[in-house]
Length: 285
Ligand code: PPS
Image (cartoon, rainbow, N blue to C red; front, side, top):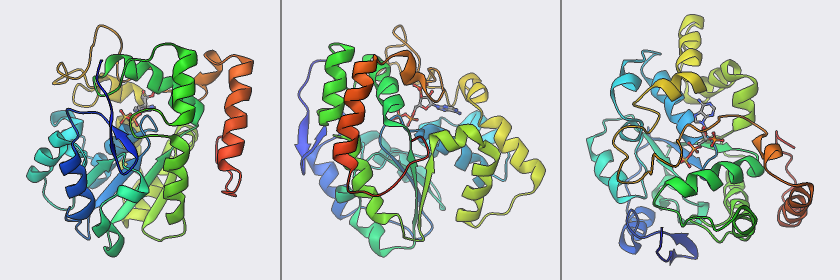
């Protein structure tokens, strides 16, 4: 795609689905309800996996909603023009989604009882996932090459800026009781255990067989098959389906199939430098 990103408080956004006015509104005027749950992520971290899990938890494991309503209508993006229209049709309790960095998230959240689930993923895998996604989705500029795009990613020269800034910003919330962190890698390793932890955070008790049903319907295979969740329907305007699919690979560690040793070492050096004073160890490290 050929366009220029615009800046809102230093963060890059693409024209089309975003605007200065909307971002200003979302930051300063968006009404947060006490029973809202927000899935907050840097792109490609596992956002949709969480939407599917929460859709199932909130319907007591009944998959009918997931199988009949498009995923982005179940949990609209608060910062996009489309999302703002879609969320008007939602009833409470709402599950909403956002890729916004901490410093421009709706101010009203911070004085509310609403909850955030922050999903994180190994940034090397995020980069690979994004490299393929940017080629098929219109909101991102087309990557010139893997090498160049890696530099853009490390410098934050892309939509939503840098992964490092996103994580560092949101980690200011890590000790708050309404803020829950989960990683893509944990979901992979123990989906059932993660669902139980998410239920606990949400104050939801579901029996064993319901948890099993949620595990089944939120697997990569089930979501890839589900036309309401796999982005094959209603996305022609945004996604070039001839170039790839949204539900691409769904694995942890795919970066090893893409990075050279030199690229991986370069990434590690930038990572160490940018994260050195954070004093947090992540699940994928
Ligand atoms: S987005 O567009 O930024 O909101 O993307 P996001 O949903 O955050 O991340 C997309 C990646 O998550 C993978 N995915 C899953 N992996 C495992 N299990 C399930 N159920 C699942 N659902 C989505 C999806 O395939 C993207 O990762 P890659 O590595 O590209 O396959």
